[in-house]
Length: 278
Image (cartoon, rainbow, N blue to C red; front, side):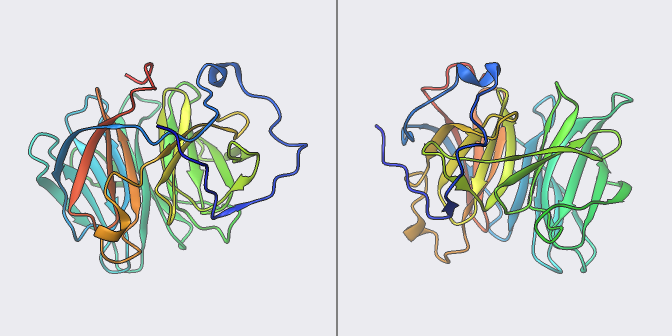
């Protein structure tokens, strides 16, 4: 079942940008937003978690979650079998936690990297103990905010959002910005409010703040080549506050794990049209 594309947070896009798709993305292209997905399982989630980042460990045996809000931001290890919180570390009260992602560093160690909202500060953690190993500074284009972050292992680069229409690409080892792309939707309009991110099957999949759409974009051009309307997953009118938005995408071995801010649940889903995802 397809639905009409709705772009409440978009802007008009000049035609000179993002005209070609990378070869890797050409095989993925849809033409209309898809509202079809399959829920495999609904599982528990801490309803006090203002979810900002969600990812599986490389072996799938741990879920990592970072949460936001001043004086309530946390870094967590979650058991993927029971969905119990195994370890939770409080951030300093001055930090508003944002997105995070798992990656493998130059020495072969699995690490968790996290960014913050307005403090231009990021952290790298030991994934076993959640001990803070490194603190770093960064800049982005929208008042130097940090929203989402994911990792492309083939290019050894982080991909970062700041709530604007841009994605920023950072070198894994130096954390220096390499380039940016402008994200556009199917009809060619800019899409801003890009939030939590997950790198899946060569595409950067993005939550959009105050939207139930997930869009997956070509990392070379920024062009959206897959779009999913997730509004029927847990309808907004059942969630309570309008800030309890869909936010959190984690790629598992045979499913995609989705949740939101202050949700009491997470969902394991698959997309029938995306046959190359697993």
